[in-house]
View 1 (cartoon, helix red, strand yellow):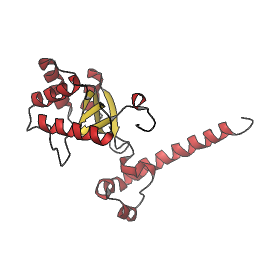
View 2: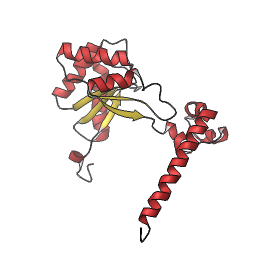
View 3: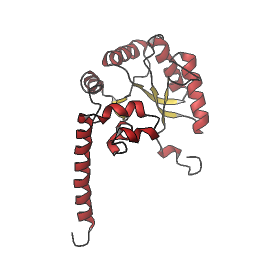
View 4: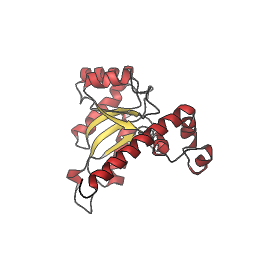
Length: 198
């Protein structure tokens, strides 16, 4: 961004909550994690900050007031939650309204063709009701849906083996086969549309 001078055309997003150096969602952890991110990213603001943990040991009020302070200071433009339940999303929205702080704008949750249940249902309903932008996390299921891992032997080369291994089930292989059929069909259509005389 610095070299190209395109910061104003970029959307910079990052997460806080799981850092070993700044764990959890206390006010001090959020503030120090954001400052560290700004330094690493070489920018003066984060466009979208995700609170990437449901830290039930810290009251939402403390977390939301800390984020609101960062927004008022211009370090953060908007925020969202990552990996929270629908009930906790609603609780956060209510707390934002009661405190009069910046409202939540987005939700990030694991969602892919092999991992749909965590989002579809309560989270999808709440996100729609609250008008939240939704960003899928692991949309390719750690590379499984890209066809990178077809057998258990393929997992030896990845640190995400424990995450991917359950997808090597009969159901997972059927989903992967369907994705590949669609991809081949789309690829053939695209090539035909690009050929001379079409």
